[in-house]
Amino acid sequence: MEKINAYYDLFLLYCRNNKNLNDKTLKAYKIDLLQYQIFSDAILDKQHLLLYIEYLNKTFAPKTVKRKIATLKAFTRFLLMEDIIEANPFDRIRLNLKEPKILPKTIPLNIINEILKMAYNQLNNDLTVFQHKVILRDIAVLEFLFATGARVSEACSLSTYDVDLNNHTVKIFGKGSKERIIQIENNDVLNALKLYRSAFKEDIENSGYFFINKLHKRLSEQSVREIVRKYTKMINYNKNVTPHMFRHSFATLLLEEDVDIRYIQSMLGHSSITTTQIYTHVASAKQKQILIAKHPRNKIKIKN
Image (cartoon, rainbow, N blue to C red; front, side):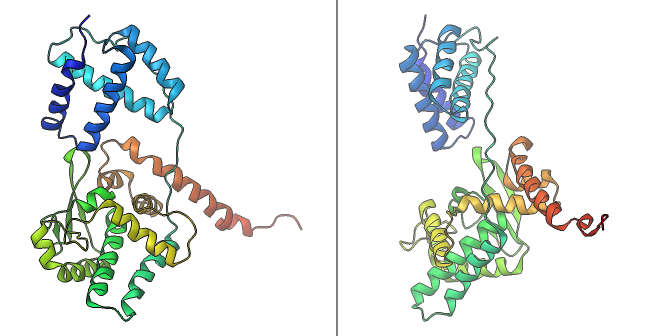
């Protein structure tokens, strides 16, 4: 039987050029394919797949198993499309992978308020010109994360042309280079972004990126994590807060304000509504708290 490892590079090239997958996804694909190659000696048939799936289920968490199998399925579809194989070895293989629901971690609104307030308060300190610029940048990053629900990678990849503050829009390129446009209509957020852009105007124009570091280059994801960590520490909040939690909070708080989940799906850039529906579980938990504490029936006393 023909070994399939000779077609890995062609598949990865196809994924890059035809499906516009990013480097991170391509790297994961390559790791998954090499792992299957080691296990099966690069033979793709039903027998080896069943043994491999059994091995994965004993070794990895359901989410990881699901991803590794998805990689093999995508590779198999490519082989079929290119007439490299004639039959799909996944036919009649039933997979029943139940992932445990992990609720997204959010930041309480009062904590977001304290983080933003702390950042703004730093502008009242005796600062050098450079320190003042850094604080303006920090504020802009924090405001942007909460205002748009953008992933940290999306925020860091913003080009100067993606942000149109005159028309209050930002163009975000998500997974698979999928484009979405988010409106920014809060005046405080717009003002923070305008002040930042004015302070870093030359660096932004020279680099081509909207968010800039002290080396006049693109701001890194790690730098954004440090910004969030810095202000969380300053308000003495002892729980871990990450940039991605601003995204979760953005979605959950909008849902609690009765925003239709399909609008939230669009703003988050989710391909499937199923991905967005995880936030309904968080909103339901909040609903339970509200009804326990606030329901007017609690004020009615029947027994004397």
